[in-house]
Length: 610
Ligand SMILES: [Zn+2]
Image (cartoon, rainbow, N blue to C red; front, side, top):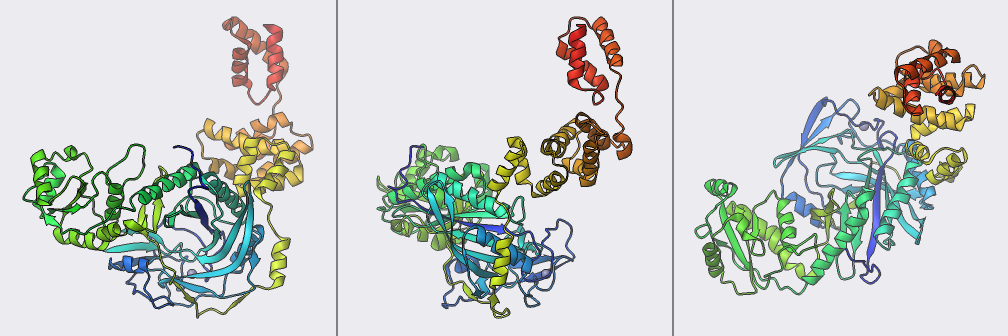
């Protein structure tokens, strides 16, 4: 991709990050645990559309209401009547509020002293109540980046939604385990200056979040990006998580919006649709099958669209693909257009010529042809495709798109409007007192960058530091042992290097090894090292014996070999296998006596005798 002049194209981008907090649920006393076992019972519901404060049903609501679906909710012994919307919300979870306030402080935000929990309309069924509770509790902060401050617009404390487990045309099945887990939503101002800057800001905010008590692992942080260039409309990219493809995704989206800018002059005229099933005969099996079950080829002319629908070399997006993506959201796959290589469908030239004649196509015109049930195609065209084409003159649609693994995105839904918030009447105003804020200020966690500095001073290796700052539990264990025994390098080896080595050598789960080599075991051995009953060089061998099942007391009794015994063994080796390199002899000796003797001593003996 050629170099992009972000300033010149009027690049504008801001992040919206949702992070789950590692506490109980926000408005009830249930724990925030995800379940993979069978539900205790399920509840079926249908949702009714609620109007927002302004009295308008917003675009997204209208769109999703077209599918009249049933929702099934799976309940557990870790969910209660609040998640089922059969009991009013309890008072806000104090632990969650505390973590949320820590995040606010680290992002230099101003905390709002008196605030109202709001209801945000949700129509996809992912909230049993039809709304999500959301509380704006801080605003106007910033983070420092290499290109200056990026302003934080606002912080919200929200309930997470129920987890979709299964979707089909008739119903969506949700699991209630996730519903109500506290989320902090961080929204930046559109201050991000280029693709690399987007990534940098996302990583900085991620680091700040991970220094607090937040949930870790897949799905616990969700990052969305709002992005536009001059003349184009704002697009929200969801699921923008993987740092490896962030820059790519940004640059691809720029190129997609540029494509739409180039299409702005196209004038869409709605021509009538024609059933061309009598002209076009299906050649491929999937087509034949559909025609046999009553499907039709329906085509229409697009005046002036010749050459505008097809793939352009080096461009990741093209209009035909965008239209196909739109239709795919209704489960519709059979889309054919005149800029495609029609040979892949095995149509005869005569058929295509006849089709063009029937549609009265001129040189500059294109056609779009869909294969499917006639009524389905007609409603698809009226509700989606014609609407989409008629708005091309305004540039790209303002929409929500999903990020895919290759860095491209696909249409998800139209951009939701703003008519979505109204006050939660079941909850009192929330007062955040100065006492609490001061308590938070006194209890701020160290940032990862600060932790890294500390660990560097303790002479740990880069890779060890990385592992420790990314694993809060391991870090706590390290800190606790380091405080008591102060042997940083040995402790890091005992916590990181040795278990990793045992894991690959004995094909054992790291989890399992950590459960054997727990804090008590490690402290016991470090105690012996401090009292000189165990030598540092023997620690690995001792841990290995414990992992292999030996009890602690026996494992620390290291039998020290008489060096004479090793000398005898080396003499024997030299006779049996003459002419090997010293390292090869070394390997054989260590295999025999490993853990009981120091390698340097063995090497001394070998070089003496060789
Ligand atoms: Zn509950």
